[in-house]
Image (cartoon, rainbow, N blue to C red; front, side, top):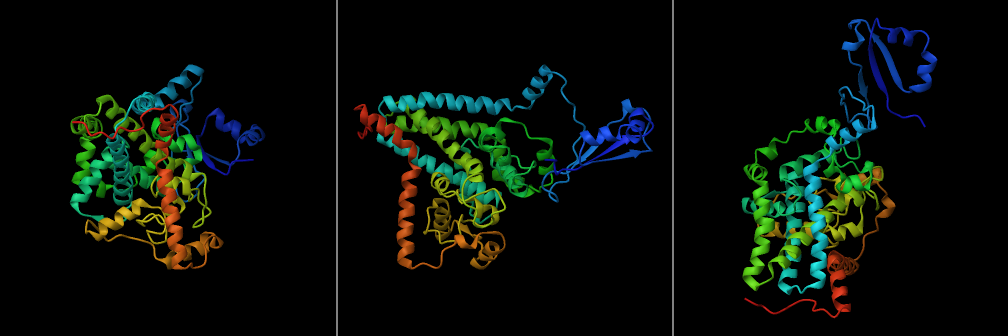
Length: 428
């Protein structure tokens, strides 16, 4: 099937190539090149060796991109291709992620074989929950989308928690995420789920950004991010902040307070917790862009996926989020009707005065979009309050069970091998 893209090529006049194209080789050209417009520029120099063929490519999403790539140098042999591929890799990210996952294998073995104190496991779960909040509530819904306004003390707390997720700085994340929403599923999308699950999940961390992503990203005004002194501070001192907050403190504090083994504290609270939280956040970019329902706009790739919603604590309703990115919720229902700890957290902070001006799409706007772009049959008729309460209880119980999935392999292994599951003794 011929490609839908079109290109225009300008060729210097006066050379043999231009003569051949105008005379003898039209049939051969038509058999090899499709959807290409060729024009002869009479104002250019005759020396073909000093001139460069320029192209203008129109990506598969007309009207969104107007990027003009520079000249492309094609590798001529295998070794040159290997060298070009090697230069495109982000070796620092490859090293960090490889070290994290290799260490996580040893950490899982250690946690399964050796005793872990109850307060260590509880600290890992609690810290994982709140660092996820720092990422989803802070970097995502506040800084990337400006879904609400927050008081300085909450912004500081969210910044510190987001630093502990190993997901990059707030500035880089919010900048890339705005690009992701503007050019979703196109070549200008840094995560581009159209390139496959692996690329959307973690592969985009391993490759340098393409020229299209860089060029289109420069069109965004991110002055609101850079003018925030909190973001500038984190962006400048991210590495020392990460080492202190995510490695040193979670390892030393359990050892001081309840005499936990240093290696156990490091493995459980730092390595396992960081790896689990990181992959649950990545699943929103990958799985929630491939599998699920699209009731609000069936024409786009992002989907509502209940399992991912449970695992990511409320980020799995991705079809709704891409249709209404300014909404601090992930669903048009009330925050208590479905498992969404993130929206629940924002609502609680709103009650106590830490957040305000929380934006949400009105029911009239939501149903108007559904009638034009979505699937109206997906939505139920109004239910009674009793049904809504029972359905909410089921959803919250199911979500709480699924969210703790990473605990079950350790518990099952320790149970069947007659090992002490948790040590409840408080030793100082």
